[in-house]
Length: 416
Image (cartoon, rainbow, N blue to C red; front, top):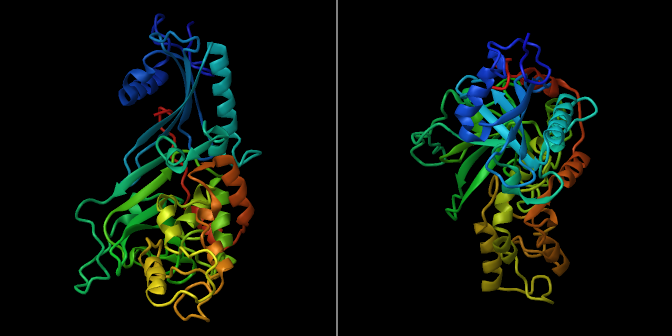
């Protein structure tokens, strides 16, 4: 009897001249439909389950058109069935090519082992399999498809105009249908005074308590980590709302839940909001991705530095009149993240009364942006740093979040 060519599969083949059983043929048909020619020459594959998804697999392909000595490619495939208003999704992470089928298969099996044991001796799934985890990369190349899926929620008719006088803004009633627990929510905001556009970030948790609390976010208005309903998160914000969903968790999801619970219970960074180094995006990215970094602050780093430019040797309060106005005005018009409280704790307001630094040393410290990091970051370093800043706690909140985390239902074809 002839058996299916798929690794660990002992189903018989439908016909002697075919390579795969009907189950794995369906998997391949779905892959080829989604990725066209990328999966036209499959040499080996396997399907497997993990703690976060029962619909995973690896595939080794061969590039017949390549003149390279390394024509084999390895892919990790993750499939998520449709969920409420979220359509089904296939993500395939591609790895560097290999010289032989045996080398490629060994690599694929190793990645499978790491994913299956995440939450055991591995608790950072994405860190174990991200092909760029050990190199310095732009944030946008780490937090992008196929590692993180970004989708706009709603349509052109979705606007939130709460702060306008007419009060016509409304929150869509079905937002919960568009998010999964531990997704990052990002909403466009327009500064009331300057008109500058920026984005506010939060973490969707599902229903975690009375009052419809569903989002955890770090805000300058309350200067701390808060749990709010959708209205509280979208307050004073307008326009597009985005969902960011890791296809493979960066950290064990239950660990993320415990870190969020710890941050909330321990009043993490309470009364210590800082636009440049401790804002809402820093907090959300640190909890979900393990990356203590704000992309929108990095994109505006030079303008933020210039906003507090002080001539060398200037004494405290030495700038008067127009100089102080320019300094404070620049700060006020800077692209805030999560509110209008733009001056951080190290800057004293007592001596001047206008929110400027009272010492040159304080102004120098104020120049640090994005925690002193550059335009590129290393994922391994970031996750080590963020886990060192965040504790973990089992309590009512972590239990609520864990209860909301749903492992995608196993489909008949587990890759697709």
